[in-house]
Amino acid sequence: MTSLADRAIAALRSNHDTLAALVPTLSEEQLAGPSGASEWTVAQALSHLGSGAEITRQPIATAAGEQVDVEDNQTIWARWDGSTPAEQAAGFVEHDAAYVATVEALTPEQRESLVIDLGFLPKPVPLVVALGMRLNEVANHAWDVRVGVDPAATVEAESAELLLELFTGPLSFLLGFSAKADQVEQEVRLAIPGGGIEITDAVTVTADLADPTATFDGPAEAVARLLTGRLRAPYDAGVSVTGNVTLDELRKVFPGY
Image (cartoon, rainbow, N blue to C red; front, side):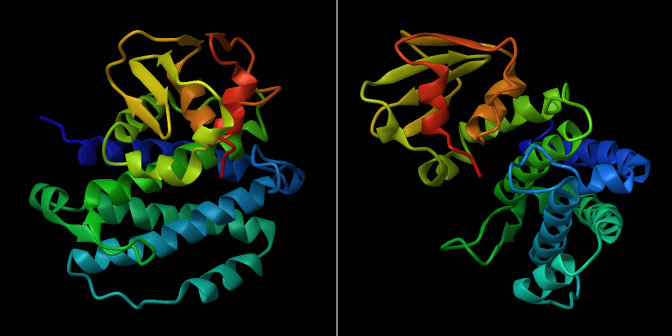
């Protein structure tokens, strides 16, 4: 049976291949143009993904037994920030390829047993958590890049469905940081494709939802963007919410990052 870790690695490969094919076609004007992330250009979104690949590959490679020359995050970010847009784009392809190659090379036993010290969480986490966090970054920031070129771009469907599954388990803790349950006054049980979102004194994504109070009418990729603050005009066409919560209220619950 294919594990969540296996599926996350496959999704990371798919997103990498899509962006690696797009990057060489981007003009200087497109690299300098706005991305789906409101404060970043396309090149800056690629820089964020590239520096993230460089930083997050280190602990995984170390856990797998590779001798790694560790560079501190501030130095890595300074180097990327000092690069030209073209260098940032090319650097993304190089470092994300290295990240994907590293995780693809992990044995089935390593994929099940490795624990990763990411450096900013209270304790090391199972590999699937590290992979899921990276996929959440990659799938959404890949959308940021692609929507800067194509306004009709969507989050890759398989990645979106996998992320929603991960948010029911290994990534559920992230909602404790990113979601703002106090932005709605009433309890909400929102039906979404394949499950639901419950908003009480906390926010949870669940695979099973009883007695929904509201319904999200839209694809899984739109839900994935909602959770990260990316379901906004003009990128919300065809999406609607009915019941005891509005789409605008949900946007306040999920302000994004």
